[in-house]
Amino acid sequence: MSLRATGLKPPPPHAPRRLATTADVVKLQRLMTHILVRPLTKHDGLQPAWIDGRPMAEVAAEFIKPNDRLSAFDRLQLYNRMYWFRLLDIMHDDNPGLRAVLGPRRFVRLVEAYLAKYPSRSFTLRNLASRLGQFIREEPRWTAPHTALARAVVRFEWAQTVAFDGAQRPVPAPGALARTPPARLRLALQPYVTLLDLDYPVDEFVIAVKRRDALRTEASNAVDSTRRAAPAKHVRRPRRRRIYVAVHRLDHQLFYKRLERPAFLILQALAAGRPLAAAVTAGGRRVRPDQVREWFATWMQLGWLCKR
Image 1 (cartoon, one colour):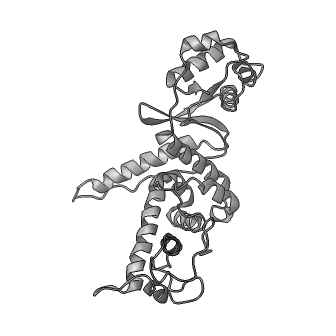
Image 2 (image 1 turned 90 degrees about the vertical axis):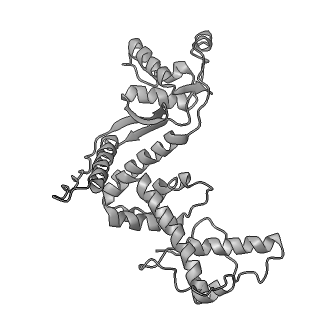
Image 3 (image 1 turned 180 degrees about the vertical axis):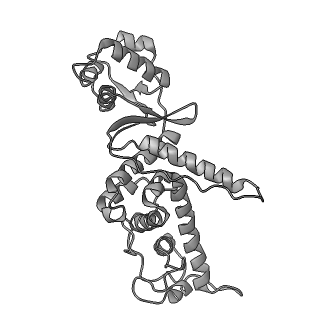
C-alpha cells in the first residue's frame, strides 16, 4: 500500500524551528496532515519511519514536546490513531452494504487503501466516501471478484448520503407550469434526488443487510442469562438484474423508489435540461399519455421537480 496521499502538497522536509509567520504555520499544518493520514502499521501504530527514511521519533521531536508519561512519538501516535479509528468508524456505519459484499476484513483493507490514496479534505465527514466509487474503478483489485456489485452498492449508498442532506429548491406552482408551453418548459430535479441505473437490485440487498444488522444489535443488547441469541442470518449477494431506482427523501426520511425504464428516461432528460416535451419523447413511443400524467402527479406529490 502506498504511504503517500494523492492530492496533497508535499510535506516540508522539516518542521519550522519557530512559528514566526503564517507561512511557518502552514508548513507545520502540512507536515502534521501528512503524518496523520499515513496508514497505521498492522499493529495499529504510527509508522516507525518518515518518508525520507528518518526515524519517526526524530521527526516528532522537531515539533512535539514529551511529557512525564509520553514521548513525542507516543503523543503523535495518539493523533494518528484517532484520525484513522474515527474515519474507519464513519465508513463502517455509512457502508453496510459494501461491508456485506466484501466481508469485514476485506472491507477494512479497502477503506484503508482508499483513505491512504484519498484522505479526507473536507471540513465535514459527510463527504468522506464521495470518491470511493472512483477509487474502486481505479483499483478494482480491492473488490475483485465482486467489483461490479461493489460499485453498484457504493453508488446506492452514496446516493443515500446525498438524499439525507442535499439541498432543496423551490417547487414550481402548478399555475406557472400550465402557462408555459411544453416545448419551452424546463424543469429540474431536486439536488437530493439521485437517479440510478444499476445492474443489481442493491436496494433490496441493502435493506436486507440493514434489517439483519438491526436484529443483531437488538440481540446483542438483550439481557438473557439462560440462552444465547441465534446468530444473525447471512444475506446473500444479489444476482445480476437491471433496475432503475430513485433515492430521495420525504419528511426527513430516506426512501428508495423503483422506476419503470421510460419514467427513468424522462426524469433523466429533465435533469439534463431538456424541455418537457422533449423529455417526454425520451421515454419512448410506447409511453401512453395516462402513464405520463400519473408519473408526473407522483413526482410533483413527492416534490422531486423544481425550478431550473
